[in-house]
Length: 594
Image (cartoon, rainbow, N blue to C red; front, side):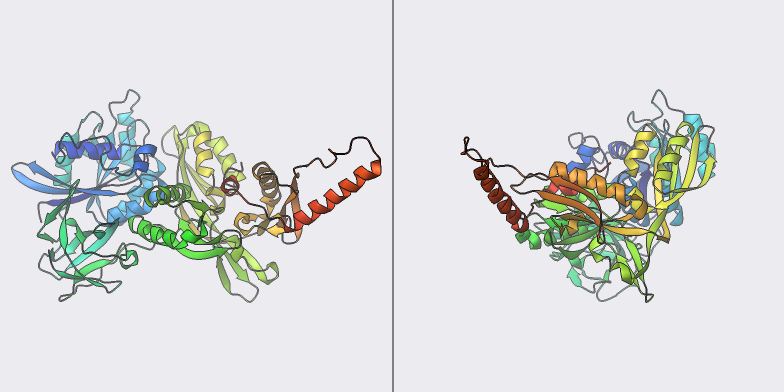
């Protein structure tokens, strides 16, 4: 075990984690030249297209230093705040972390929050200053920032360029020398923690785990502690680029297991694997994920409901931060209420359902979780506008608040404060990290930032501001339910819970947007926004007009009037029985309302 090292790479978005992982794999000779490509660990099409890491990827390398062979288990993690749950799971399976900081951009918000995650688990941190080959790199200034943040010595910081391959040997040496080997007893009862899983349509579910104590051998009878299910370990092995079967995996190592599990709900990330005949204690896994944004996902064709359920279960294996439960909607039929960590996460889940499982889905308007305190003192959690109780039974409504840390250049302070004020935020603190970089702390409602806050922040600050946030609890707020009615029928999928001060503006914009998107019918459609019984905005989609007077050339006015009256009656009747089809773009329109 002295020769094993487990470590992960943590950093802000775009600071070069995946490229650094490529170089480490190259230098240790883990991959042949033919297997090598840029960001080789990002194996999902989506990751390559968007240029971001979505999943944490584990891989094992062999490295020789001073005549001794070492086994290095590396986990490359995502940088975006929406995938921080992946990072926290990777950290739980490691003893050390490479903290990568971009020499041209310096320390950003996500760098700090990922660092705190690592420090909570007592990981050994190795600071790496990346991209020192760039013409506008500022290695000395950024080194000072790292020293201030970590309290390390300046000579502990490794200067590297993952693109040019500078400093890679030093990083590998530091991993071996500074990161402690895993502790654990290979003879003790088995304790292995599941940190990820994947669905394979030929072999069932593949479970990735880290062994803390004991040894697991091929053919062993194993048991998953939280579900109590028992399996035979048909195949175990280590994770190289392809899986490599082994006869046994002992304490301190990372590996995979295939045991023909068919049911997705039998595997839980954070669960403990142990032996049936010599059970060990359950390990404290990860805390349960707290979703930030809720939205409904419905199959376009209602007969595909069961297929969608199966797809969601398989996707949940690979994305443990996705939370869902079944729900029904008057407009859309049967579907699921899903909890996501953010808007990007929601977009990725929708894309993956369409690509990997061939499902076409409709997503409703995202909302956050509110709490209604009723007049009798009971508390109801509201994940969707349709769950809102009657106004006369509610004492008050509470909404979730977050603490947001924004790190930016000094010149953008004004516009950013204005943006946060518009979003009902309150500034709490402002500290200068250097003469040019400011860290600002705001308290603001989560509902205001889930839509487009991040995009606007990036636009205002020319891409320089970085955002990190966490929940700080619920506060009383004046929230109302805004209903959209088409010809007097409520469309529950377009309802939203908004702050009273913004309800009129929101309703007006939504009606205008829907007027553009709804196709014209033979009858006129009234689009109304209402709070309770009170209509606050209205738009009308005019009816298509058929010229019933075409056959009257000349003749008496009463003949024309008779035809027009007849048409008017028909239109009126049509409007009462006609139903309005809502295209998918209309649901998405709410997202692009600004």
